[in-house]
Length: 308
Image 1 (cartoon, rainbow, N blue to C red):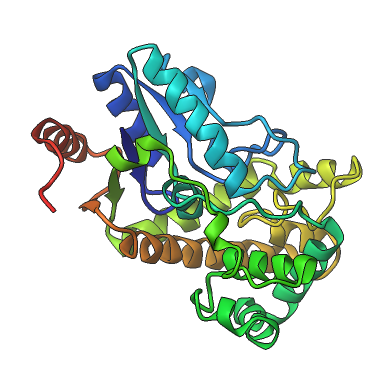
Image 2: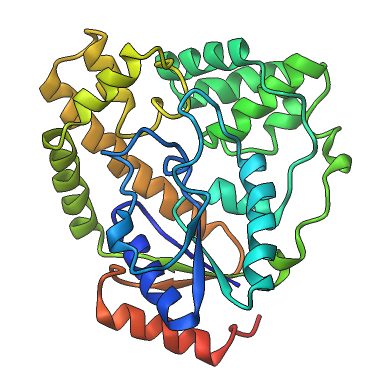
């Protein structure tokens, strides 16, 4: 089983389709924004007509008002892996959300249901004071839990805060209840793209401008007008949160565009850092659309996993 990962705008989706065509594969989306339906412009979902007949799963199926979690994705991904393999086909996890991939490889303990009002409050604190402020807050209430996470690993830090406030127990104390990883995680090969940084940032800037020209503001306005929360996971994602701020009168349009470019560049850098900390990742230096990258990856797959 394979995972094709890397930073945003690196060509993962295009590469995933080409690899799937060669391997009789089906794609399981591993992107935390692409799971949401009704948000399209800034998600980089591959249009149906460009998927070349390759089935795609766990994409465009969650309402924007639901805060879909990594644990939920991992459980559904495991089911899809079994379904795909039962048909004699190859599952390919494709996307850039490392937290999703880790949830599959290292399942979370069964935690209390999300308290939406608490999460909204923590989202507001993070937006106002920054991600490292959340880590300082966790250090005050759960020092043992805080020592387990990087200060900027805010999804895990924020969830640890939620767990402590809801259960009055450290997330560390609840880890013995962690379920065993799905058996497929033991044979998962992670293939990561690492394109030239300057060209990647240029692509991100150009793609951001294209999103705004393609109606990103109008899409977000429509969702807000229909009652979707501006603090939802979907509208809090990179590419969307600054548009919300613009529509709320908190910044002008030019500022929203430039800050979005910066947000997405920072996100790409965090993605690369995340995958460098994951065990067993095989790196390929280029963009997914490059023929040489496809050939290198197919050769690597044919040669088999690298020795430990």
